[in-house]
Image 1 (cartoon, rainbow, N blue to C red):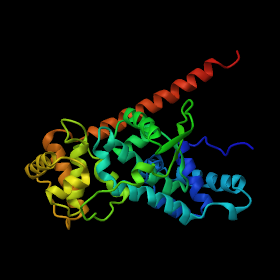
Image 2 (spheres, rainbow, N blue to C red):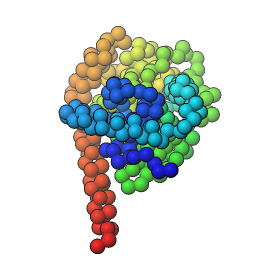
Image 3 (cartoon, rainbow, N blue to C red):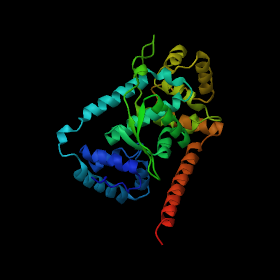
Image 4 (cartoon, rainbow, N blue to C red):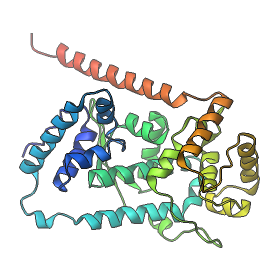
Length: 315
């Protein structure tokens, strides 16, 4: 059987739309999640007035779902079964947060949360991954995404199903947590309420938390827990996995930059504080510049592949 059409602007976006179509969602449901990882290109089109692009791709997804959906629909995994699997992964990331204080750990944590969010939207744990777009969702660089996906594969968090080819990204499967994470948890403290994946990504994907001269990922993780009401230094150290010295130093920096907002403050107030602090230390616009570079690289790569295809045509 041929594969369903994937000539849309993004195979990642099409796989999400196809999953939503198969799950019985509507175009209005799609519009509500346009800012999710993988759909950002469609969100940009809509913001620029090209609403027809979304409608056209949704029609194609509906048509593909009707043609390529397996006939025995009752054999498809129940929606709550998928959500339970994703909840297990998210809960493990929350309980074992301290294990991600290791080098590369903060990036791994962001990537896994982004994959959870992407899987919830696509309604599948098998995902086509564009490293540049995943980078925008996590606030990381595309090269970091590529490198850490390999590290996550070695740790059994993900498995590569199919390698990337040309402009198409690789296909990855998000696995259940490795055994060592299932038996580990923060010890000796009362675990705070879980932080949703979208809240973590929204907080971490900010100019302020980029590497020096930004404050870096360690401070991002500490600050996120501060905003949820965890202010005790020893508790913050236990939850995040950092030393008391690191947490104390971070809290001093937050005080200097006026980032110690109470947990009851609004999301708008917190975002304004982050923006103001980023401007103060001179890192405002770093992620926007990186996103522009990713777009340029993607367009140049697509152009070069088209050029090679044209040169190889019979004369």
